[in-house]
Amino acid sequence: MSDKPTSGAKEAVAVKSLLVVEDDLDIGEFIVHAIQQETRYQAFLVVDAFKALNTIRQHKPDMFLLDYQLPGMDGLELYNLLHTTEGLENTPVLFMSANFSEKELDKLRLPYIEKPFELEDLLREIEQIIGA
Image (tube, rainbow, N blue to C red; front, side, top):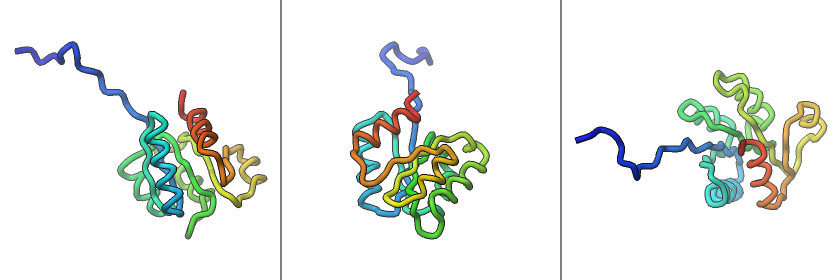
């Protein structure tokens, strides 16, 4: 008996993942569901920056989708912490918010999408950032 896989076996393909940090549970669940249904990516939801920091201990995502206005620590502070974490220094981010400082994000050259946004626009931005 051979230990080789059968010719019909498919090789496992690594699926890219996104960590969605959104304090509005309804919006966050909608985004995660849409990403998983409409793209080839896996998405995980946490509702605040501190849960995001705990989550990255077990799972390092390929991209962050961060709400700018989060309780306790805003999205920019979280971004700065994440990008000083070993292994996450070059992980891309997309900010989303109805109220944020465009000037600050533009100065840092960070991509963002304004709420409310069209789902197709969000998915297109995600694909442009990590689809390569």
